[in-house]
Length: 73
Image 1 (cartoon, helix red, strand yellow):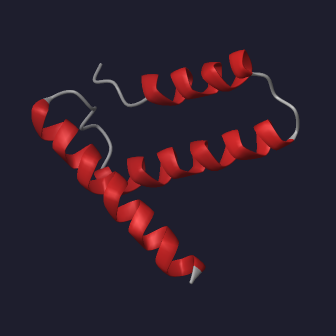
Image 2 (image 1 turned 135 degrees about the vertical axis):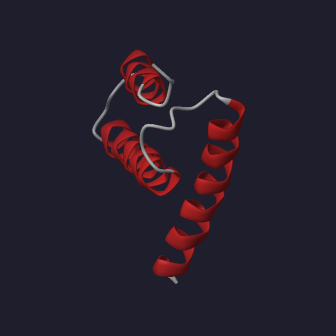
């Protein structure tokens, strides 16, 4: 069940990222599969940080940093 959930999440992220790459909104320097796994890991890290007591500003900083890594250079 967990493997299927991960596969669904990665597929959805891959599709969105690939679309953004085609539009020029997301970097094409890395593959959509790699970026999908990166975003998934960032979300997981944010969950752990939140459970550990991170405040909203900290979580927003993590999210902004993760999203910035997706931008084309």
